[in-house]
Length: 321
Image 1: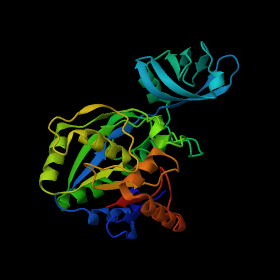
Image 2: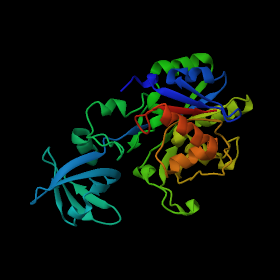
Image 3: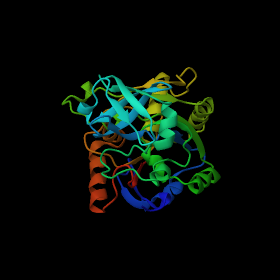
C-alpha cells in the first residue's frame, strides 16, 4: 500500500466538465486562501470479535454495533443461526458472552466491559468487500491521522489520504481546517434495493459540530470562501446543519441524522467534495451523483477504471470542484 499522500487523485471540474489525473499531494494546489476544509474526526472502534459457541466449538464472528450498557451490546453476527437465545460465546482471553435477545440484531451480555474486551482482542472492522482478515497494520492505516472521537465501525475513507504534512501545507496556504464528528455505522454499506430510491430506509448516525466549526463556516461564507467536505460523511453533517440556512445561528449542534442525499439535491454548504470511489447501488454513490451530476460522474468512473485506479476504502481519491 502506498503512502497516504501518494494515492492518485482524479479531479473533476463541474463547470468545465474537465477531468484531470493527479496525485493526492496536489490537493493543496486546488485550495485558496479563506477556503475551509471540513474533516470528520471520528475514530474507528476495533469492533470486530471472533469466538466459539460453547459446546459445539463452532467459530462465529461479530461486529459490535452499539453499546447498550457497560457490559452489553447490540451486535451483527455471522452465522446468525448459531446465535440462539442463551447461547454462550467463548473468547480467546477467557471472557464469555451470552445472547439475551435475538431480533432485530443480537444483544449480548458480556462477562466484562465491552470497551475492555474490544481493547484486548478486538480487530479493525474492515468493509465486507475486503476479503482478508484484519491485521495489526490496519489499526494504523484504517484510521485517519486526525481521528480522536471513538465511535465508528467504518473509517471516513476520504480522510485516509491526509498526512500531517499535507494538513500543515493547507494551513500555511491560508485555508482553514475545521472538524465535525459523524460516527459511521454498518448501514453505510447497505445497498439501495428499492426501485424507488426515495423509499430506501437510511441508517441513522450520531453527529456533532463544534461551535468553532460553526463560526468558521459562517466566516467562510461571509468572506466568499469555499467549503470542502472531506468525505460523504462530512458532507452529510454539513447538509444536516444547513437545513436552517447558511448562517447557522440556530442550527442543531449535535444529534442523529438520517439525511439521504440523491439527485436532484441542492447543496447548501458543500462547495467541493473529496471522496473515494464507491460501490454501485450505494447511498454514497448517489450522494456523489447528486453533487457531480450522473453523466459526469460515470465519465470519471470510466476513466478511473481504464487507468486502473484503486477503488473503494483503501483506494484512490476524487476531488470534485
